[in-house]
Amino acid sequence: MQKKLFINGKFVDACNDEQLQVIDPSNGSVLATVAAAGAEDVELAVQAAQAAFANPNWRRTSGAQRAGLLRDIARGIKQNLQEFAQLETLNNGKPLPEAQWDIEDSIGCFEYYATLAEGLEADPQAIALADNNFVSHVVKDPIGVVALIIPWNFPLLMAAWKIAPALAAGCTVILKCSEVTPLTALKLAQIISDTELPDGVVNILCGDGASCGAPLVKHLGINKIVFTGSVETGRQIMRSASDLATPVTLELGGKSALLIFEDVDLDAAVEWTMFGAFWNKGEVCSATSRVLVAQSIYPEFITRLCAAAQRIKIGNGLHSEVKMGPLVSAAQYQKVLNFIALGITEGALLISGGKRPEHLSAGYYLQPTIFTDVPTDAAIWREEIFGPVVCVNTFSTEQEAIDLANNSEFGLAAAVLSQDLSRCDRVAAALDAGIVWINCSQPTFIECPWGGRKASGIGRELGPWGLDNYLSIKQVTRYTSRQPWNWYLDLPTDESPDVDQ
Ligand code: NAD
Image 1 (cartoon, protein in one colour):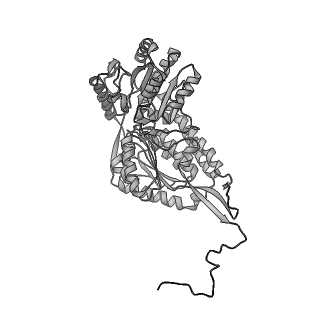
Image 2: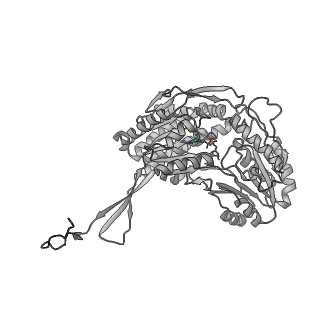
Image 3: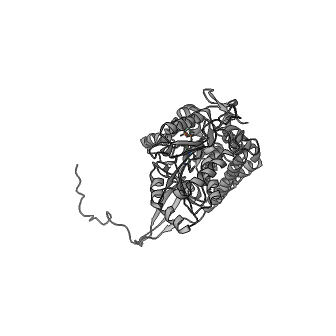
């Protein structure tokens, strides 16, 4: 297990010898102790990334060469897939099959951006000008040194979503992984160090927000910040970035709604409700944690939902058949328990779960939790809980369902279930969110744009939009006329210019 920072192609201890403990959420024990970066390490990493960006060995690589390097990384992850998945489960708690999805998607992400890197070789895009004296075209340059900051819920996948397009574009990067889940990012560093990628192109730091994240986003050498995490941290980063006018892309939180109409297949509706709210223990930014059900089917729906939720096997994610592992950390566990207690005092009805499962005395385990009759001004209805807690309310008309869904500070995702596809399209058009799922919840594709509206963020990742985050557009314009440009040159030569002394 790699435990050191990865700076300028080498694994190093932190300058001040600081370390942080990585916890196994299934029992609270220490899984590993890793180097914890501070401001001095940030400085070294930025210097390395700047030097690498200026180095012709990287700067002059073609898209096709970078594609080859991205495929080498994908291959390296693939050869270690099981080890990556086990580390993710050990560190994050998610069930092993879900960790395997993450690792497979990470491989797919490096492969996808390899193909897009090759596409960057295409001819520069000509611009049609009304003025025939000039020709113009657009080229896309790498934006420079990028700071990539990620959370703990999909540790390797979030790293891949950022590193792959950044390298495809030709940037150099400093990845700051979450202090809670650094292990797969450090293993990725090992894979990268085994490729031909020049030193300093990728630097990987572990460390907390205050000691490592804050100096990184305030550094003058950073040309762009791409951040995934909470709204609060996103706002803080945007404030400090504004001092230097550093551009940001922000993928923040959510409180997404799932709308279930009366014509659905009830078993399918229960399945999508559970998947939307409970997969990855509900620690998902796009979790559809506010469910709105048509009044007429509510009694039967809620009975089936509670019965199904109570059948979910909870336990150590490494054990087969486990469908829900422990929450990621003691802090997150306490935060979710506090929300559950608050929900009860706010007048919502706790109808299932809400407690530690009886058979698990240690670790951060929680039953899948269902609230109904939730006041729409309650914190559990409005705020992101980021745990396996779903709030279920009813609606009587389509417009009421849309209004309730859109009445949120967030706008990351929304989902609609109905057999009436014209209604699905109508509702999808009315939902104020960056992502809308029809007759499903949560599927995420590397080819599709990912990101939210309102407090859920700024910009998009994935697809070609994800690559654009790391490219800077340059206009190149050439004067083609045979006639001289003579605004000044045709001044009369027999008169001395009238200059103030
Ligand atoms: P967080 O905001 O606490 O931390 C995210 C990262 O930011 C961590 O690496 C942390 O160390 C770092 N950080 C903290 N303070 C910082 C500072 N002042 N300057 C720079 N970096 C700082 O979030 P979290 O608890 O790790 O993750 C959960 C949050 O992430 C949830 O709100 C979730 O919705 C969000 N999330 C969003 C998406 C999305 O795509 N929209 C995806 C996954 C997670």
